Length: 94
Image (tube, rainbow, N blue to C red):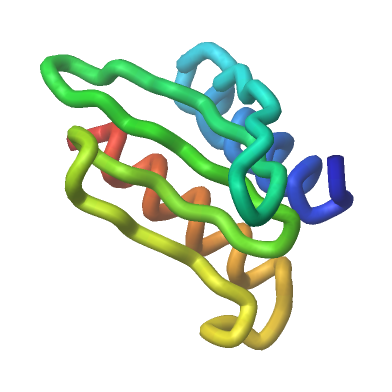
């Protein structure tokens, strides 16, 4: 697991725990091009697949709505992770 992946997971779970939610558990996946971490979260009648790659992250809502956070779009990893976590938390609170 990369430092980026560890920071994504710890930041996401800290945000969830601050809202009284349980931590998200990620499983390693061996993809065709690269390894990544995947968590599946059910919220109300919706499903969320949360992906954390070696240097980017994203989530898919109900198997169709894909939101990605990539390094070129942010000035640093900290801002990428903050935006990713904020977006996940917002999507899960709807």
